[in-house]
Amino acid sequence: MLGSYKGIMYIKPSSLEGRFLSLTTSRYSGCSTLPYNTLNLGYFTDDLLCHKNYDLIKEIFKLKKIIISKQIHSSKIINIKTYSYQLEEGDGFFTNLPDIFTGIQTADCFNVQVVGENYLANLHCGWRSIFLGIIENALELFYKVNDTVLKVVIGPGICEYCYEVGGELIESF
Image (cartoon, rainbow, N blue to C red; front, side, top):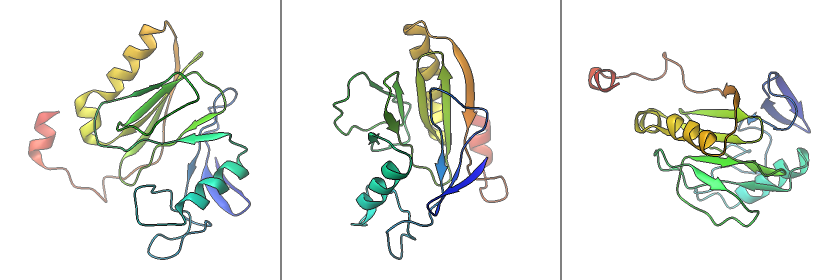
């Protein structure tokens, strides 16, 4: 479902209601200036206004905390067990804590959320992460906590018209 709130455009899967909030924002209607084009959430850029964009997202969607990782195109999933979080490298989050928004930054990769009865895995899925087993790692985490996977939500990403895949990559999969 496409939506807009206070000028922030977003996509929110209508199939994911209830305990977990899922949304994908566009890059428009934030505080950043060129070359970042307003709603830049690229924390690891030179954009000094990026922090204001995070505050804006928290205010609009009534979030207490947004956590992100330094994404490295890996299969590492960070298990969030407490509200005190130190920035880590990894490409996914796994948690059952309420009031935490796990942010995945994408450009040509996909955001994939695996939703269980009590837990959520939020994954940064490019071809490298998928090849290295990030989805399998998420499913293993659900198994370890004895939670049943109910749904998988795949967010927007690059299409076949915009990204060419070479034969060697196809063969490796």
